[in-house]
Image (cartoon, rainbow, N blue to C red; front, top):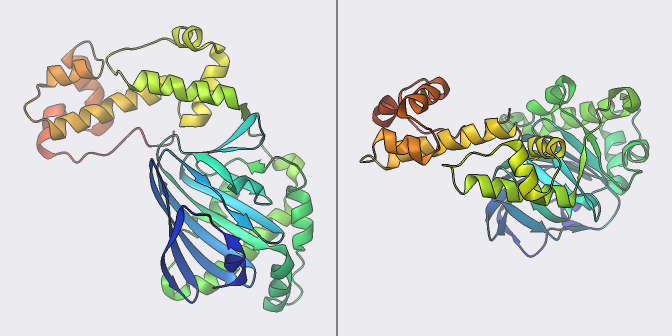
Length: 328
């Protein structure tokens, strides 16, 4: 494999699964689940890694020799990473994060228990020569990209946009026979985009939340989802967990991807779908009560609006799809 991979120590909780000349698959494990990382060498010093995690959290002990630019794109799910002792950055679907790699180390949390995205790792000491050799008169200097986006202690985050979606959407499903050349072209496009971007005009400020706020949001989530028969107002939750109502709503939406009541509605309907499928002797009225609906009629109307089927039709014909994992 390329030196950009050999110079990276992924830590003791990462094991090799498969390797060939230009591709390597590794598995990361934690007490809450596992994830797969599929790495491709694009040019000397440039790597693309597909990250597919199904877990609540994991610790990364990644260390790298050299100077790097790391570009992370979230396609599905959510990821939380610490950006300082007191602040956490939430990356959501379509967002882009750029830094020198320091925030790929430490504990990451996945509020939806799923994260799928890409990491582009660029070794500044090797990649410029490779780019210059690949295409004559390529005007982008990686040192300029690094100075532009990696000068701060906090990562630079760009909110989802059509321009970012255009560049990255095509990287997730590339036919194997053209993958190597296609990745190279897309890396050039990405670097040109970042080089030309007028960051003061383009950037939408992503909120960094206090670590204590995010911990309270996790506690609120656990509290609400542990008993779906109960409903709470924003004011009740704010008093119970000592957090301002405005901060609760804003932080919950960023961490879990939808307003608190939308999220809980989806949780209830998800659990109801599970019960309909796996508890055939349970009456619809009992399922409605188990997920917090006052009457079977209100539950059936909400369930049909979401799935297109009545509860009985779903029990007979339906296939369960988790609505609570969808990004709003």
